[in-house]
Length: 143
Image: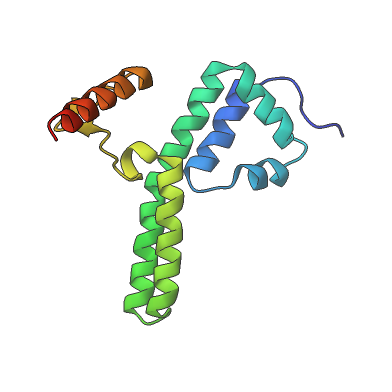
Protein backbone atom coordinates (compact mmCIF):
# COMPACT_ATOMS: atom_id res chain seq x y z
CA UNK A 1 0.00 0.00 0.00
CA UNK A 2 1.27 3.49 -0.85
CA UNK A 3 2.28 5.87 1.89
CA UNK A 4 0.04 8.79 2.75
CA UNK A 5 0.76 11.92 0.74
CA UNK A 6 -2.39 14.02 1.25
CA UNK A 7 -2.06 16.54 4.09
CA UNK A 8 -4.09 15.59 7.17
CA UNK A 9 -3.78 18.05 10.06
CA UNK A 10 -5.51 15.77 12.60
CA UNK A 11 -3.08 12.97 11.81
CA UNK A 12 -0.21 15.43 12.30
CA UNK A 13 -1.66 16.38 15.69
CA UNK A 14 -1.56 12.69 16.65
CA UNK A 15 2.07 12.37 15.50
CA UNK A 16 3.09 15.54 17.35
CA UNK A 17 1.41 14.31 20.54
CA UNK A 18 3.62 11.22 20.39
CA UNK A 19 6.69 13.41 19.84
CA UNK A 20 5.76 15.59 22.81
CA UNK A 21 5.70 12.49 25.01
CA UNK A 22 9.32 11.81 24.08
CA UNK A 23 9.03 9.95 20.80
CA UNK A 24 11.37 10.25 17.84
CA UNK A 25 9.58 11.63 14.79
CA UNK A 26 11.18 9.22 12.33
CA UNK A 27 10.44 6.16 14.48
CA UNK A 28 6.85 7.30 14.97
CA UNK A 29 6.30 7.76 11.23
CA UNK A 30 7.90 4.39 10.47
CA UNK A 31 5.85 2.62 13.17
CA UNK A 32 2.67 2.69 11.08
CA UNK A 33 3.62 3.04 7.42
CA UNK A 34 0.04 2.48 6.27
CA UNK A 35 -1.27 5.38 8.39
CA UNK A 36 1.58 7.88 8.54
CA UNK A 37 3.44 9.76 5.82
CA UNK A 38 7.13 9.29 5.15
CA UNK A 39 9.52 11.62 6.95
CA UNK A 40 10.23 13.68 3.79
CA UNK A 41 6.48 14.09 3.22
CA UNK A 42 5.96 15.18 6.83
CA UNK A 43 8.80 17.72 6.44
CA UNK A 44 7.21 19.02 3.24
CA UNK A 45 3.86 19.44 5.01
CA UNK A 46 5.61 21.23 7.86
CA UNK A 47 7.23 23.71 5.46
CA UNK A 48 4.00 24.32 3.55
CA UNK A 49 1.57 24.60 6.50
CA UNK A 50 2.26 27.22 9.19
CA UNK A 51 -0.17 25.59 11.63
CA UNK A 52 1.80 22.33 11.46
CA UNK A 53 5.10 24.19 11.71
CA UNK A 54 3.91 25.89 14.93
CA UNK A 55 2.48 22.62 16.27
CA UNK A 56 5.80 20.86 15.63
CA UNK A 57 7.80 23.60 17.38
CA UNK A 58 5.46 23.43 20.37
CA UNK A 59 5.59 19.64 20.56
CA UNK A 60 9.40 19.80 20.74
CA UNK A 61 9.15 22.32 23.55
CA UNK A 62 6.78 19.95 25.35
CA UNK A 63 9.20 17.09 24.68
CA UNK A 64 11.99 19.04 26.39
CA UNK A 65 9.82 19.56 29.46
CA UNK A 66 8.93 15.83 29.44
CA UNK A 67 12.66 15.03 29.47
CA UNK A 68 12.85 16.37 33.02
CA UNK A 69 10.93 13.27 34.09
CA UNK A 70 13.54 11.10 32.39
CA UNK A 71 16.27 12.94 34.32
CA UNK A 72 14.40 12.21 37.55
CA UNK A 73 14.29 8.53 36.61
CA UNK A 74 18.06 8.52 36.15
CA UNK A 75 18.46 10.15 39.56
CA UNK A 76 16.39 7.39 41.13
CA UNK A 77 18.51 4.79 39.33
CA UNK A 78 21.66 6.45 40.66
CA UNK A 79 20.35 6.55 44.23
CA UNK A 80 19.33 2.89 44.07
CA UNK A 81 22.78 2.09 42.65
CA UNK A 82 21.37 0.70 39.38
CA UNK A 83 23.78 2.98 37.52
CA UNK A 84 27.12 4.45 38.53
CA UNK A 85 27.76 8.22 38.86
CA UNK A 86 29.70 8.50 35.60
CA UNK A 87 26.89 6.83 33.64
CA UNK A 88 24.38 9.11 35.36
CA UNK A 89 26.44 12.14 34.41
CA UNK A 90 26.66 11.15 30.74
CA UNK A 91 22.91 10.46 30.56
CA UNK A 92 21.94 13.71 32.28
CA UNK A 93 24.38 15.88 30.32
CA UNK A 94 23.07 14.37 27.09
CA UNK A 95 19.48 15.08 28.13
CA UNK A 96 20.36 18.63 29.17
CA UNK A 97 21.96 19.24 25.79
CA UNK A 98 18.91 17.88 23.96
CA UNK A 99 16.55 19.92 26.13
CA UNK A 100 18.50 23.07 25.30
CA UNK A 101 18.22 22.30 21.58
CA UNK A 102 14.49 21.53 21.72
CA UNK A 103 13.57 24.51 23.92
CA UNK A 104 16.46 26.99 24.08
CA UNK A 105 14.37 29.77 25.60
CA UNK A 106 13.86 27.73 28.78
CA UNK A 107 16.73 25.24 28.87
CA UNK A 108 19.41 26.94 26.76
CA UNK A 109 22.42 28.88 27.95
CA UNK A 110 21.54 32.44 28.86
CA UNK A 111 23.69 34.85 26.88
CA UNK A 112 23.62 38.51 27.83
CA UNK A 113 24.25 40.45 24.66
CA UNK A 114 23.69 43.76 26.37
CA UNK A 115 25.67 46.01 28.60
CA UNK A 116 23.90 46.67 31.92
CA UNK A 117 20.58 45.84 30.27
CA UNK A 118 21.26 48.34 27.49
CA UNK A 119 21.76 47.39 23.87
CA UNK A 120 25.32 47.51 22.60
CA UNK A 121 25.54 49.97 19.77
CA UNK A 122 27.68 48.95 16.84
CA UNK A 123 29.61 51.62 14.99
CA UNK A 124 30.61 51.92 11.41
CA UNK A 125 34.17 50.52 10.99
CA UNK A 126 35.25 53.68 9.14
CA UNK A 127 34.08 55.85 12.05
CA UNK A 128 36.00 53.63 14.48
CA UNK A 129 39.13 53.98 12.35
CA UNK A 130 38.76 57.79 12.29
CA UNK A 131 38.39 57.84 16.10
CA UNK A 132 41.46 55.62 16.46
CA UNK A 133 43.54 57.86 14.18
CA UNK A 134 42.40 60.99 16.06
CA UNK A 135 43.29 59.44 19.44
CA UNK A 136 46.70 58.35 18.15
CA UNK A 137 47.40 61.83 16.71
CA UNK A 138 46.48 63.41 20.01
CA UNK A 139 48.63 60.96 21.98
CA UNK A 140 51.63 61.42 19.65
CA UNK A 141 51.38 65.21 19.53
CA UNK A 142 51.84 65.38 23.28
CA UNK A 143 55.27 63.68 23.17
